[in-house]
Every structure is written in C-alpha cells, then in structure tokens.
Length: 304
Image (cartoon, rainbow, N blue to C red; front, side, top):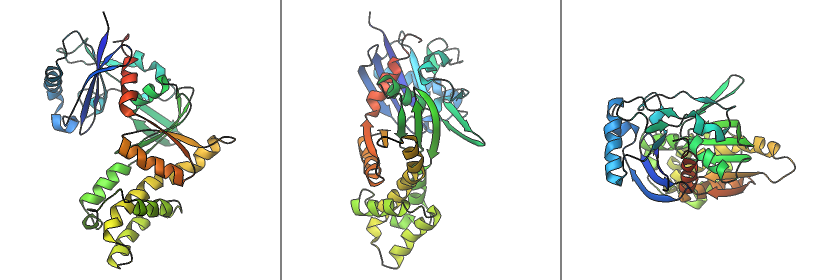
C-alpha cells in the first residue's frame, strides 16, 4: 500500500496544504487564508486543522507534518530552533510531536533554525523545509534565496547552513504602502521595468536606504519623477538593498567561478529577483516552490 503524508506550510497569513505520496508527487492541494493570525489563538489550531482535513477529504490514517509559524511562540506549539550545525537532511529525526491529546501521534512540527555568527543572530521558521527540498533535489551547495515578507539569503555547503541573512523586504514594502509619506504614491504599478531599474541602480550605489527612499518622494513632489513609477522604484530599492549587501560576499565565496544564486519563489517574485541578479552580474536559477516543498515533505514519510 502506497504511503501518503499531508504537508502543511502554515504561515502568518496563509496556509498551504499538500497531500504527498512517497515519491514526492502531489495528489491534492489546498490554499486558504487560515494563517496563524486568522486562527486566533493556540486553542483553535486543532479545530482549524480538522476543518482542513475535512475539506481535503484526508482520512485519519494520514500523518500530518506542519512547518512555519505554527511552531512559533504565537502558534499552536512553540518548537525550539535547531542550531545551524545540524544538517538539513537530519530534519526528519528532529520533528516535534504536537502535545494536544487529540492530535498526539499523528501531527508533528518541523523545527526552524537559529544561525549565530559572533554577536549576530538570525532565524528561520518554515524556510528550512524548502531548503531540505532543494537539497533533496541536488542543490547541496551555493547561495539559495527565498524571497517574501522576510527574504532569506542562505549559503549551503554540503547541505549545511554556512550563512543566513534575513531582509524585511516584503514587510517594509507593505508598510510603506499602507502608511507614511510614501503611501499616497504607492498605488501605481510596482512591476514597471524602468522604475524598477532606477531603484536597483540607486541601491547599487550603497547609499543609505532611508535617504534613497525619501528621495522617491522628493522626486515626485518636485515633479522630477512620475508618481506612477514610485512603487517600482521603491521595490527596486528594497530588493536591490539585498543584492547590494550580499553581492560582494557572494562573489568572494564563489571566487574562481561564476557567481550565482538559486531562487525559490513564486513565478512573479522570482522573475523580479532574476532581473535584479542580472543587474548585479549574478547568474540565477529558479526553483518552483511547490515542487521543492512537496519533495521536502516526501523526506518525512518514513519518520512520520
């Protein structure tokens, strides 16, 4: 009898679930807005999960693996971070059972990672599962970029996390759009190619971000730049700041070879990062996040 497993990427705002067979093939999937914030409290996660299983028609014999904010201090059950010295391929043996009596024995949570370098500390929760999928697909070495609300830049060496840097790119863009002096200018098309290129070029000059962001406003109110272009310029500035910070370290790490990154992201977002990579002289490969996640969940079948 073929083994099946349900993988749930339970984020802050959204939830994605995939029914996977032992070969990593997706048999069914579901996405909704029942993220951690919508669930509304630790005691309600069980009911929310029950509703998801009923919607997908998943029987009681299918084990459940959950990653993301479900394991945070504000989630269903806080799961301690693993040290970055633990290889990604060891994640299956570090799953934490859900303590809820109704779900114990069936549901497990994937721990995140904590990276320390001197006094600097960085963390991830959810992205480690995608990294495991990438490693299982043969991407054991090099720079992997996971764009999003909190964009992650991760250097892997033989499946080990050697470096981790997080950038609040998506969150900052949302905040600047929702309020403040730039918000009235942020209703245009953020995908405008010319505006995006302007932002990337300004970011490449390593000028203070708080200054370059204000100059977007100055350009509009002085009628030196079109207001419709402002969102794309801001996007270029924020994404370009990631590349500007990472590019020199990346090129040093890849000395003797072509500097390259592998992006795990949705098509639209990955395309923006590919444009930025080309602007900063980097080669870029894009991995489909759904395939990566399904491959990762298949790695947990025997342990679950």
